[in-house]
Amino acid sequence: MAHNRTVPNHDQVTPQPSGDERADFGGVREQAFGGAADLIAMQRAVQRGWTPDSHWHIGDLAWQRPSLSGRQVALWPDATGELDAWAWLAAPGRLELHATPGRVEAVLSWFDKTTGDGPRTVTAMDNDKALVAALQGSGYREVDEPFFRHCLRQLDDRLPAPRLPDGYRVRSVRPGEMAERAAIHRAAWRPKWIGSLQVPPVDLGDGESGMTTERYELIAATWPYQRDLDQVVEAADGTLAASALGWYDEVNQVGLLEPVGTDPRYARQGLGAAASLACLHAMRDAGATMAVVCPRGDAAYPVPRALYHQIGFRDAGRAVTHRQPPT
Image 1 (cartoon, rainbow, N blue to C red):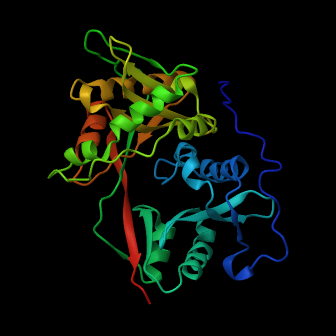
Image 2: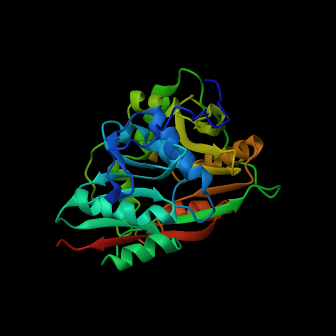
């Protein structure tokens, strides 16, 4: 797959606002998610304002691409056609959003209208002053839920090399290997295995991850996917045992590590750390100076965060859930 490492042309991605848009929600345009065109516009909005405190990275949205298919999205273009804000309902009454400070009130008003009388839930970074203030002013209150911690590390010459047990090697995923790549993700994210890593262990049933070959192919066809940032650990018999996927934002020179996983048959050998380090080296080679990863931060699911601390990540901001009770 060719690596497109520049921001795609945006000239026809987001049309100008039309005259019939509703001014009470700040010029919002509601529509079915339009695929790559809408996604690139949403990614550009994130990219333009990214800081180490940001909730979203362009890679988060790329990973969400299959989940967005068929959804209604709300888009707030500015006078030039670039997006100031976007939003969608991840579940009834649960909002996902990105907004400049001047658009926050319009997005929350749209959310109130869309949700009606039901309870409303929004997750915000703890240091997003504009969004947190608007939520508190609208009657939202923090709730105690599992949360995600953003962790950062510099990609400098202190980045350690991957270390693997004898017989294993780490490499980038190969062309034509999407079925195997999807399979290692399913194995690593099987609910029964994830439940066993929680403290105390939780029975999540014996289902499977929803990752399919077709779903992974769609992700791999989404900007800014690069195959050399998609790292896998191969066992001596050629079986894929672990993986780590990186996403590089060359405008901000920051890479996102998302997701990382190990087949439980090969667990506790340091394979997840090795795949992650290989991915960080690949992102540094691409030009990244910083990496971010966003594991669970609460005590009930400590293993991933401990792994990232082991390879040099340190805690930064965290996500906080805010809920407004039904009216």
